[in-house]
Image (cartoon, rainbow, N blue to C red; front, top):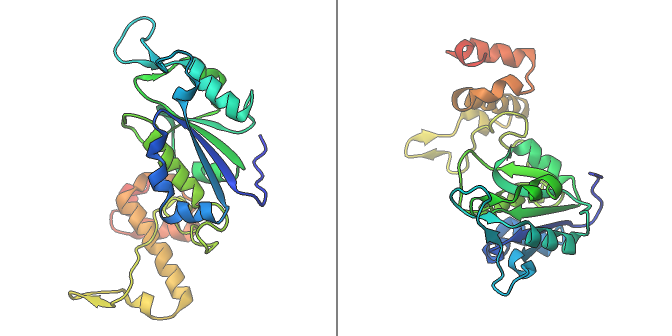
Length: 256
């Protein structure tokens, strides 16, 4: 698939049994501004509209028995292919606890596409033929189970949309985000310089940009060491940074 984005809005099509979940979030804050600025286009579709019977049935009992219901393949295939064509020419993402764990690099990859589609699972699962023959990506937002894929779809949409050029205004706004460099972000402070006896670090008030950059990087390293040491083995660190962590109290035991 072509992952080169052009000067046009990213289009995101979301297929759900509860499309009304999305509209309130799309009408506030960053996503609202992205849509109004023609940087993002989001369309939602009710899978029930493609059900074949008069009851608009979208689920059925699993073959072989077991608890829960399974989302049927016919309505989902019909919905996706009627909107996107057969086969779809964009990534089709299934939100499922069995998917690949979503992270910042994955958000960056998805942000490079012109067009994405997301299918929100419900009930016990979806028919496996959907995963095998329609879906290109299966994504999970964490090792826990929700009642449906709508909240995960919003998480993915939000994380991807803020990476689109122009959405946040400042093109450097996301460069220091947690996980963008493999580390957690450094701490932030704002006015007043003293609050209840707690003061802002002097480095932030010094106006020394080289020292500020060094402080922020070190704080990012230390915060990651303390809170998410599991990230450090894959972080892009130079020899000085590794030595800094190793010389920090308990650094050797945490930075293996």
